[in-house]
View 1 (spheres, rainbow, N blue to C red):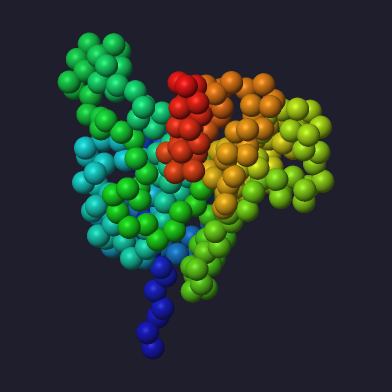
View 2: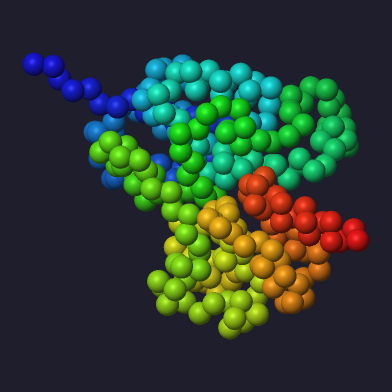
Length: 263
């Protein structure tokens, strides 16, 4: 009788803060239960090391920011049946992608005594810019329940659910007062995808878009509302040019605000 094998899983890190990997580790007992259902063959932060292992599922955190990253992500893709990008860095370039609109070489020359030794690409780009990605899990960082939901879906043989609803829907489910309406605070919730449980509005502050653009995000309407609330075009651009600055919807909104500033 053939003994069924557990799916082989790897967790890889590129340019990032490690927060999405910590979402795995913070699962606690749920991680131990998960380890009984899958074989973790590579996860440097948790212990096992085998970066070139053939795996069924590869989770990738971080953006492509160095020449070495370009070669490594191609190698990981070849060795993975399914590749899942997790977190804002992997899905939209991350906070480090703010350098994409600046002169990176000039920055390096101002900071380092030997800037030529700094191996850095001109741009920080999401994983999907270089290889085929089977699923993207947005967030900065992603949450443990998100990861468990994805793994459980895959183990059951069904496609993971992409929660592209808006943070506003989570505020309503939690019976929270809208900070834009009740307090006049500019908030990214109307264009940001759900997943955080409306964490920031639940604490009385504005959403700042860490879960990336929601489905059918009306960035033009939100930018106009920001203007009515007193934000000038540069301030509006900064709202969209943040953690998920390279997400197409946010990038277009930031550029449009920038053009309005230049008129």
